Length: 179
Image (tube, rainbow, N blue to C red):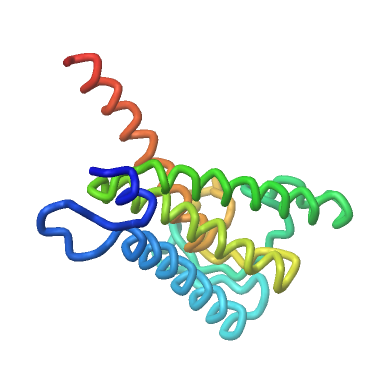
């Protein structure tokens, strides 16, 4: 495949029905839309801190707000520290993700999905930070007294994307060392 096909988003994969750019845009946009719609619904349908059990003793929809990052990182920091930190970190992450997307061949749909999902998740949470100064979380997994921090659709796609990338890097190394 020519390097111009990689950077332009054109696909030369036989049977490909969608260009690389269109696929990445669809995944990224789909994540952002799904994330924003679910957060909007929770903000409008549930009072803050209301919890609705879905699977009793394991999973609830719980309206929470997180001014910090993942796992409430910097949640207690002053906005003068927190806001610039998250904007710089998010801008850097988006730049790195866009760089990676340009490097991935058009026929590597799982890798494209993974990076586009992480990008969509980062953009979804950035929209919340810009609009509200905090992120709306609502998915709560727990068991007895143990509880995972509340998260949202954007966080889910970031986690899924990173997991796919880790699995790919482990198996890509294994297959290269076997050759």
